[in-house]
Image 1 (cartoon, rainbow, N blue to C red):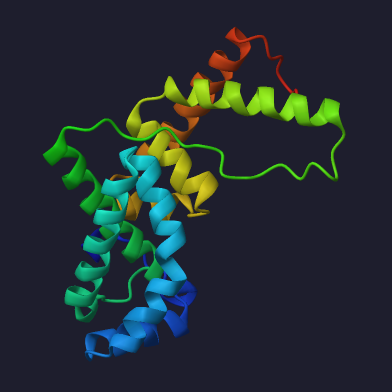
Image 2: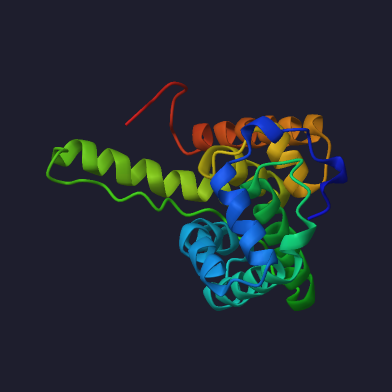
Length: 198
């Protein structure tokens, strides 16, 4: 990821991850394995949600790891390591989707319900809401789904999401707000009232 447009976040960069990248730049395969262990799951989930194809997400994840191996020395430290890595994943995912002319993925709710702690009514309510949320997510444009994924699921700040997607912060905020409004409209159309929570 080109960090020239990334916000100055040196104070928030994780020193341990920076050290791992330095080791990767020095050719240490153990460091790459450690980085892979840390990022494999969140990157795979992100790519799966962007690409909507499990096999392709696995393939692109490997491409991301290779790109990190090849470009670790180029990390300039102007963003968090995770922002830089997800930026690589974003660009690799976009390239793969374009090559295969695939639609982008609708996020699936990966959280599992704990049936032992919830009564049957709450479980039924949650499953209905989950289904309707998935339908509502289908109505979003891919760029809006991606913005929600980065901000809400992956926990990136607006500034970091802007750096990952190479768009201005205002654009990310606009995409998230548009996505929320569209999801609210879609849920209301499916019979949900504002403020209903499981």
